[in-house]
Length: 261
Length: 252
Image 1 (cartoon, one colour):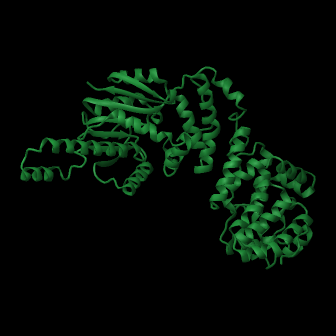
Image 2 (cartoon, chains in turn orange, cyan; image 1 turned 180 degrees about the vertical axis):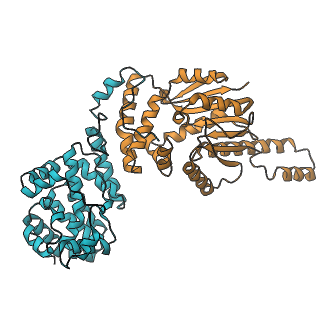
Image 3 (cartoon, chains in turn orange, cyan; image 1 turned 120 degrees about the horizontal axis):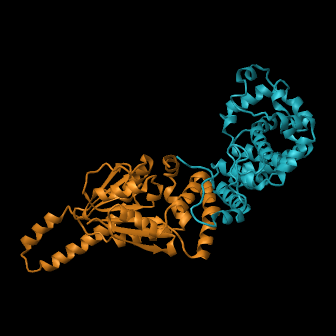
């Protein structure tokens, strides 16, 4: 799997746009909206490679923070101007409101691309990039408010270990969120989806990235991943409560959610 | 990493196997190292995609190679037959010589007299800073012998440059493509010959149209099949004599 992503890293984003015709952006937007992070949230994004979730998180938290500040100002309309300017100073450097995202990925190349993207797009604060393995995270227990893994868990050899690690590093009350390709139940759509996956995607891989085999592998790994209910059971086995899932596009993609209580 | 071949793992869902077979016998087995079996639909998509990509990004030599493999279904068997029915070509098909740095004795070739095939070939490689090892191995040809034929065509390409006296710049490559198009009938050569000149200046286009292309076409038509020459056994032969033997007119 490592070698697949090494060769895939640079063209990852281009390939995602081509393969999903840009729809992956919508999926990720919905994912972060479902997360609904408030300012001050500490997020761990695993297999976050090129930073798509992390950047969306920062955007979301930033606008949430702005609304928060505006509401605060409204409530402060009876204060003196000295008190108002003092509160400005306190909040000055907290455009993110202490929110932080740690992007963790097993692959150095993916992290490199992510860091470059962050610089290019102007994301500087609230971001950390850590090299690590989802099956054995380099973090202490009970540290994070939210754990996310978007299109990463199907590449983990021991999914059960990754889920246990997710449970471990989350604070009590923390939320587990997973965005992943899943099972399409509608038979007609399923056939079309298979046709597209097996006929078109490796061709796209060859033409755009010069790499047929990696994309053939990606398509197969999607088929091997457990369906919605089975994955839900696995998440429950790791100790999460109130586990639920939401299908997007009739099950092409699903968002699974669980809480550590 | 496990970037393994398609369909070697058992499927978790029922009916998967049936569906795979309906989609074509892709993923059954490799016919040669590097072979990727493809369905007709995939070949069509590859041909279209590689053509577009090769046009938009001329540095994607791998796309030119893929285009050649996916469109060569008529031309390649034709070439193979030409080789089979020629004594030297037949021997090449049997012995499957490969032109690679590891198989060539560069010092010996360099020591050959000026004007000999070996000496001029080495000179060409050094002047243009190219190596015979950069040729793409075939992936999408579904016949093991035809895969060798296209591999041979790729490896002989540099020798074509030598025999035609053309450098590796855009102009030289286009001229060689015209020659190869006439010689092999490969759609990729025809497309390359037709679209290659798009990136040339008008002055070069003029020279191309008035002198080089007509000469390339005449030579291509007159010459016997270039794949039927066992070049590895002719290093000492003077280039001019080989040109005459094959039927290539002297370059302008």
